[in-house]
Image 1: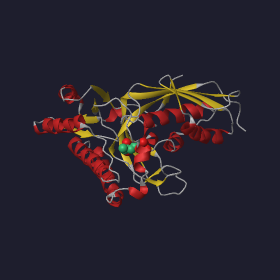
Image 2 (image 1 turned 180 degrees about the vertical axis):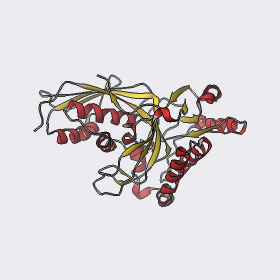
Image 3 (image 1 turned 90 degrees about the vertical axis):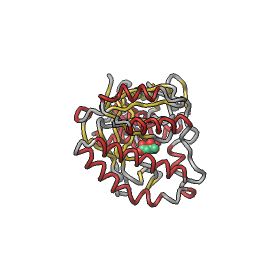
Image 4 (image 1 turned 30 degrees about the vertical axis):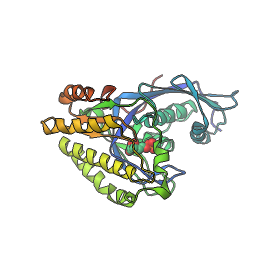
Length: 328
Ligand code: PMV
């Protein structure tokens, strides 16, 4: 048995967006992805999570943004930490996002990465970044990437136990200053979350096998473009991966339509900007927000143009951020 739990621990993890997307699982129980992915960790969007294990508590309690939520999905995750630490105490979890939750801004990525770090430390564990990535993956596939900063690759892995399905950094945040303008087109939580959307195994898209088959080529092309700091190729590959993902989602039965009118208008505005000479590319996850990728010298112009798109409620600017870290 491990020693008694230490005092509550607070960790911060930043959200990330994938440039080469992941969708689909090779093992649902262990949450193993069917394909690898490459993402950027965002400085401007993060989750702070405080976890304490308490001897007297009867059940886990979880607050997000000051509101009590159903603890059941988190209990499953906390059980992984308890099993590893050899403790049986229930946890009190308090979590805050500095951005809208569950609306396609990867709150599950930053949330589970912060929970993995704060929870493991509060339980008295000192896990390596790779082990934390494997743990975070079991909460949400994209969370495995938020353990690291900068530009990050998540490996699909081959092993049945998932021990080779982890993320690692390709470049640190300061090695290539890229920026993202997030155009928020809807502040509500999405109707179909990623896990539900991608678990429609028997009703999934006819395109799914092709998606899985071509993923290694997309990853290799992106890796090479990142190594060469070739922004145009990175952007073009990111836009292509985003549209491929949405083609897959749209062709799932029933079709998953995450876009609204402002999402589409923002995509066109970004392409018009590009046609007029500004190097900027879009990407979109399982939600209606549009993320525009550009070099820092173009950020102000991109943000100004996106703010004018009908239906865009707000814009957020972010550079590349650090990996998950402790706050106290
Ligand atoms: O992390 P999950 O299991 O919620 O899935 C995320 C899926 C996408 O955001 C659409 C793509 C990705 O690679 O982040």
